[in-house]
Structure formats: structure tokens, C-alpha cells
Image 1: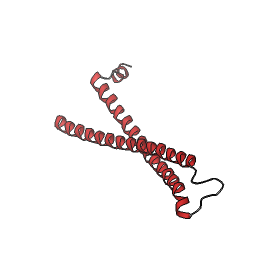
Image 2: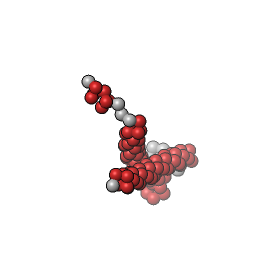
Image 3: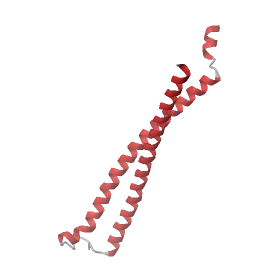
Image 4: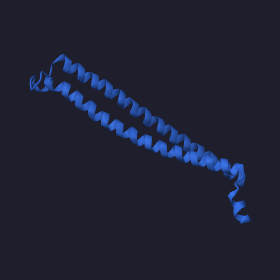
Length: 124
């Protein structure tokens, strides 16, 4: 029983190192998820922007002015432009998240490389 108690007691330094390692793993996992979400967001927003731009250009390129609505109606055009602006902002958020996650993963790799170098110096 005494051996089990001694194994359960972890020196404070080891506990801190283990907590630090777990924290880094959580950051890496979160960064991967943010990158994936950023890529998905960029893809969806690009499709939306292309769709809205196509709708704005269609009456000029095809000569079609009326379908069931007036495609040159200023209210419709303003709504589409507003949607393009909102989707553009959404795209910006996706790009920002993707770049942040990419930088964070790069920094974590640098930190891991520094830790490996430090371990080599300390332990030979």
C-alpha cells in the first residue's frame, strides 16, 4: 500500500510539466478545429458571393429584365449588395480565424522544437 501512495504523489514540477503538455495539446486540437471551420467558412462565403454577383450581373449579360420580379429594382439590388457586404464580412472572419489558427500552430511547433532542444541540453 505504501508503494501505491508513493506512486500517487507527484512532485510539483512534474505536475506542472504534465499540465503544460496537456494545455499545449488542447491548443493544438483547438487550432485544428478553427482552421477547418475557417476553410469551410471561406468556401461557403465564396459560393454565396459568386451567387449574389451572378444574380446582379444576369440581367445585364442575358438581356433578361423581368422574370417574376424586376431584376433591376433598386430595392432588390440594394438587398443583394447588402448581402454581399455581409457575406464579405463573414469571409473576412473566416480568413482571420484561419490565419490565427495557422500562426498559433506554427508557434506551437516552434515551442515544441525549443522544448526538444532544451531536453537534449539538459539530459544530454
